[in-house]
Length: 70
Image (cartoon, rainbow, N blue to C red; front, side, top):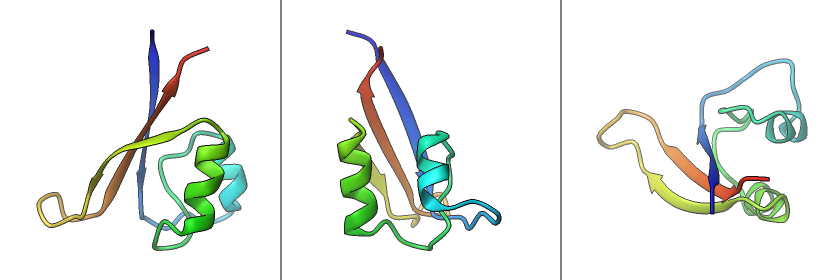
């Protein structure tokens, strides 16, 4: 099985809604945290959270998701 991955950091992006960013595969979210609603939306779109880095090493929080590649 082949996988596709999405890396999301918590950097702010202007000019787009969260839904546009998620559907467009953007690597950033508008708000500063991944909320329950955002995580549920990613799950509904087939994304599974596989790793989360709190930013203590790299300087910014990063979440890594995967889903089966079509």
